[in-house]
Image 1 (cartoon, rainbow, N blue to C red):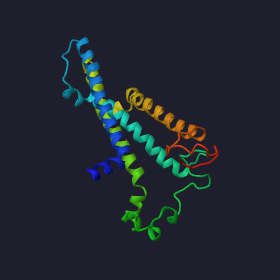
Image 2: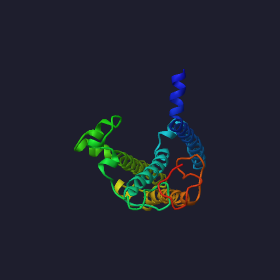
Image 3: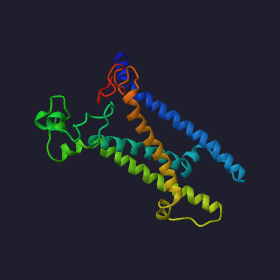
Image 4: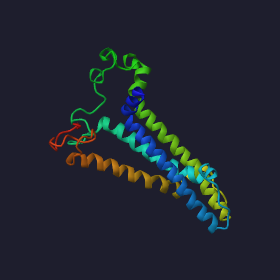
Length: 227
């Protein structure tokens, strides 16, 4: 029991966000079902069950379009902060420290410690994969969820067109359509604004005790310092 409590405490942040994610996803499913069934009734069609709705293209496209924008945000932030800096932001490296850094700074190869990941002591492809694994996974999830959005979006879009007695469109036509890019760009702009706000506001504002903030008494110009 003590061990379980310890593990929960050590992983409290990820567990909390997992629970919040599941609650939000469940809430989206219920709210989406109610909205979908309202539209079904208004059009003279039969309401659907929750199980059928969450397996539908309408639900899938709404979920996927949010996921892809979130992972795009993290992918861009991870990769751009390697080479770009913002003076005064705790989310940035110090000006002059741009780049992939030395093997010693990264604790790889002969500089790896006894507690370093095993691949940090390797060479060649294994070391390269470990060195770029975070960006690669974030980028891959973005592309896969964007692909899922395009497939589910095409299905949902064609269902609407067929109900209006219009011809369905191909996947290629859909991904070049205003419908697809409107869905994508309206999410991208909000995510990019959120990142911009975090980078700039964290220069001048503080949150005591948060590692995402500088210490309350840290100078505004201090960079890469977290509380």
